[in-house]
Every structure is written in structure tokens, then in C-alpha cells.
Length: 144
Image (cartoon, rainbow, N blue to C red; front, side):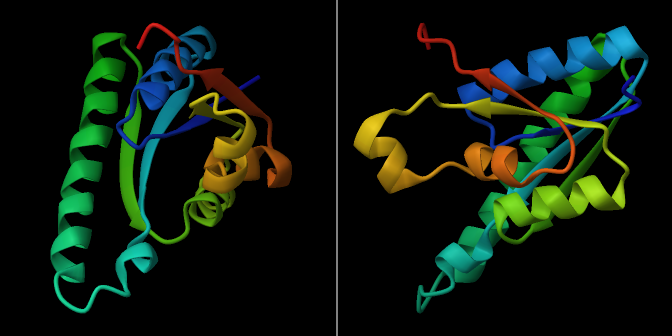
């Protein structure tokens, strides 16, 4: 059913919950896992000084986050490829889906409600609403 599974990560506990599900799904279907981290440099472009340093730090964070996914996948015997890219998160996720023939996206959600959800928005929600492939959302545990 699934041969290519994408798990976008931002290194958060919500992403960690999704990673566990994505690895389990990949193991069940003998699928390849794709770990993606998106650096949204545009959010920091208005900084007069230091934007480059912030982007470099985020790229380093992305490498660490995707490496953790790859290590967890390897421990489970699941093949994993990693990618750190730049752009608007939900668009970059869609582009990755199209470019790599992804069958399903597994994403974490923080479970925000009310005004927080409205004001902060949600990458996961935008992906769910606009994706051409199934999106499995995994809510962050309330114990974290």
C-alpha cells in the first residue's frame, strides 16, 4: 500500500510522536522513510544583521533532527533518506511529495485550540487541506 513515506520534522515533541508512527508504518509495509526538515529563511530575512547566522543554525538543527530520524529508523531496520531544504514549510512538503512520489505523509500536531490555533496557524493543517496524498496526523502526547 505504501512504499514511500514522508515524515516532516521540526525536532519538536509533536514531531517525535509522528516519527514513531512513521517508522512503524514503514516497517509494516517494508517502505522507505523520508525525513524532511524545512528551513523557512524568509521568516528571518527582515533581520538587518544575523539572518545568515540564524539560517545556518536552523540548517544545523535540521541536520540533527533528520539524523535522529535516520538513526531511529535504522534501529528498527527501516531504510531512511534525509533532506534539509529551504522554503515555506507546507509548500516545501508538497514539492517533496511530488518530487519523490510519496504515498503518505505522517505529521505531528501540537493540538492547539482556539485563539492559539487561529493566531499561530498550523503547517500540518495547511498540508492536510491541500495535499494530494493521505496525511496521517499524530497528536503530541499531553504528558509532554
